[in-house]
Each structure stands twice: as C-alpha cells, then as structure tokens.
Image (tube, rainbow, N blue to C red; front, side, top):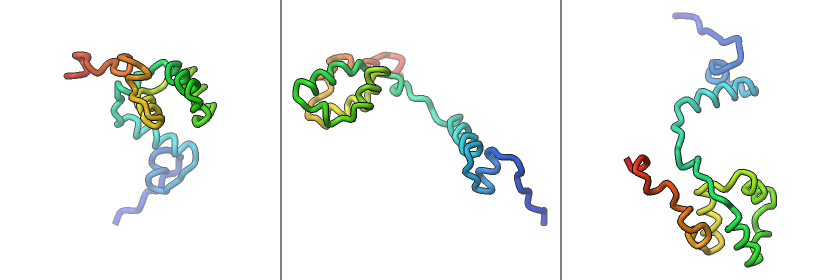
Length: 113
C-alpha cells in the first residue's frame, strides 16, 4: 500500500485533504471554483437607482431599506435582479419604476442565441 502524501504547503491541496480553512487555503479554493463558474452577462446589467429611490421617498418607504444599501446603489447602480426584488417587495412592477431600461439586453440578438 502506498503511503499517504500529506500536503505541506497551504493552498488547494491543504484545503481539500487536510480541511484547512486559513485565508490562503480558502482563497485558493475560491479561485479554483471561479475558474469553472460561468460569467453571466445579466450580472453586468446595472440600472440607475434614482427612479426607485425617488419613488420610495415619495411614498415614505425609503426607511425600510438600510442606508448603506441605497448609497451603494447610487455609487455602482442596482443589479437588475435586485431592482426586480425591491420593486416587487414594495408593490410595484419594475417597468413602472425603470421603464424600458428594465428590459435592456433582453431582446438583443446576441443574447437570444
């Protein structure tokens, strides 16, 4: 029977075989998984959050969203899926808030193929 080889350096082998969860091993495992994870084009679609924020201010509902969250939206935009989630949560259809910008990219020929 061949002797069991024990990894001595931190990384993906130590993460898998010895169950090490130090930062080096976890980062190596995360990078390994990222190689096989498809990059979705829909994650890149971000909307201008100002119409949603304006609507929530007008209806006095903005306090229900943590301030750091909507400030992050102002900096980076709001992901299309989160825009859908928050609109539905407050009883609006996303098209009411964002107009046709909500459907941006849905009917492009490249994405349809």
